[in-house]
Every structure is written in C-alpha cells, then in structure tokens.
Image (tube, rainbow, N blue to C red; front, top):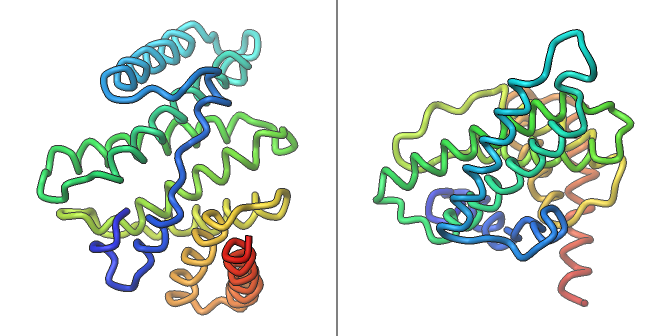
Length: 217
C-alpha cells in the first residue's frame, strides 16, 4: 500500500520493500501483465473449480490432491502478482480499482488459506504459503483506502501467528520481517501480551540488522 494512506509511516516502508512475486519460478515463464494476466487468472480459476468439482469426498485424496494444491498455488500467485501491480499504480480516487484489489486480496487469502489447511505442516511449501497468508491478512487488516471495512482482529491474529510460525523455520527477508514487526506492534498495542513484547523486541532487532546489511551491501 502507498504511503499516503498510512499516517504512521508503515505503508511507506511496506511500499518501499514491495517486491514482485517470483512468477517465473512458479509458472515457468515470464510473469504476465495486463490482459494476459487477467486471462491467466480466469484460466487458473476455472481449472481449480473443475478440479474441485471432480474431487469425490472419501474417495482418493480429495482436496489434498497434489493437482488441486498446484492449481491453488498458481491462482494465488497470479492474484498476488496482480494485487502488487495494481497497488503500485493505484489511483485511490477510483472506487472500482480499489474494489477490484480488495476482491483479489480476499480471493488470494481464501485460496491460500485452503491450500494451507490441506498441506501437511511438515511440507516444505508450508512456510512459504503461511507467509503469504500472513502478509495478505495484515494488508487487509491495515486497509485504509476509502470505504474500508473496520479492521478485523482475526486478520491481525492470523498475520502475527502465521508469520511468527513460518519465520522460525526459514530465513526471512527484510520485507517479511517488517510485516512481522508491524503486525506484532499493532497487536501489542491492543493486548500488551508479554510474549508479543518479547517477539517484537527480537524481530525489531533483526529488522534493524537487515536494514544495516542492505545499506552496506
């Protein structure tokens, strides 16, 4: 999100650290844009719907099928990519664009959340999916574009809990660390939980270290 919608400066920092999703690695070719991206999303959405219709409860893997998992990964990644592209050039005076971004974000959270539910916790992809759901949940919690819904504490809890859990099992970059620090800060302001205070201190120090490393690189 862009700086002007976050008086405390969080949006400015998040916008500065926003990076494009690595679609080349995910789909095997350069990331689509514009009409090609819209078409790719429609195709991915239709493919996932067809796979879900074909999944028979209590017969075979059902929604745990690797084909359904791959379809969810593709759709969520494409949606996240479109959110990033539109958010970078979003005109906040255009309610249709704002509504479209919000709809994409809600769908990406739902699709990624379903993927997370069906993935075994020891799956190598679990942490990456959890980071995505946590980041998108925090974006929705902090949505301060015009006519936003009131912040939902469940989104903040999802952001804190998923980001914390996933970050323990992999090296996270500066952007993800910033998301975690901001989410922990917001929840600590509401609940003043000692565990959150400790985590905020630890991850705040790590964020400072990452910032020093990036400036000296």
